[in-house]
Length: 235
Image (cartoon, rainbow, N blue to C red; front, side):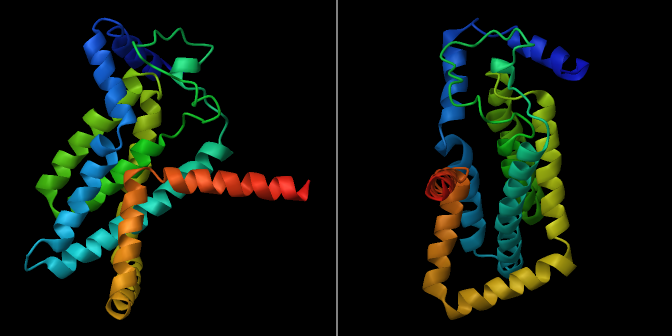
């Protein structure tokens, strides 16, 4: 642990077990995908169908936003598996973390804390929204920071640097892909596909945004199952 993480964690953890209602609220937020992903993804649907003189521009940005967050989550998972394993504060043997009421860390032991998948994904989405509307995007940044990321630090699921690095990754990847040389070919290909196969496009659009809102939980479970099945078959 570093001094930066320790100082912030000690301060935040000092409020743990002070109020059961606040601890319960933090647990509820972390466990509720509607509060997290669905709320933000709904903004993409709003801007997609909003009547505006900028509808073509907005839809192009949404395409890049969705593409960017998929790239961002892959990068985050590769880094988490490639970098040295980092225990989460709640189960870190070197840190005496006071668990807030109702906190359960049984499923976190095999997942490295660094970087935060939630921060990477949702800051990537917030950046995509910011590129459409600076006002809505700024509010989305605040929402991601205070409603999605803060509870994860409070409950001991992440250190502050997990969130900060995750946010930097998500923002940087979206801005990089949004550059014209990269974004225009992607937008053009997707628009061609949507014009030719409109029904299939919206089916895929729905499925992608659904999985994004749930942090690709079903995809991860299916991938883990297939990997275990393949390894078992080879053995």
